Length: 185
Image (cartoon, rainbow, N blue to C red; front, side, top):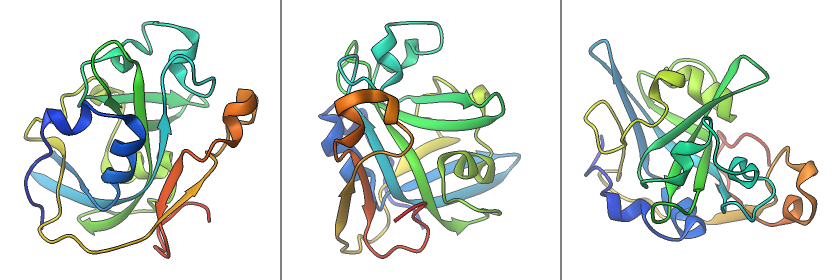
């Protein structure tokens, strides 16, 4: 069902490249002896402190410190005081970039909707306890699929970042064309 776990070097590259290459990969979470897995079908890239939509644009804080590195760790935060969202930290340490996971296609033991970052986290059992978790661990990681299926990538502006000025319209949201689990076409 899942292939090899992605190495640290995968994450320590250009954020847009990592975002596009995360599509089709498997997010795996093992808790209470149950393995959950879903195929990543939609993501958004956040490019560091100069990107006004990125949390790191406000500087290094207790909340955003994980974004500053090292790469290959989860940045999990709460929105609206109750919903969790998960990002994957990218680029070399200190760069403060990440990729938001927006939607998954359920593959194994995933119950509930997964079309949207908060729904994805709820279905996969991801919460703040996993903030700064190393994605090279054995209980929470991203892996290649056993066989790669070809797909086309759609590029669109990110969702919900209207406050970010010129950054709101940049095509930094990527999803698998035609996948029914994408959160918003």
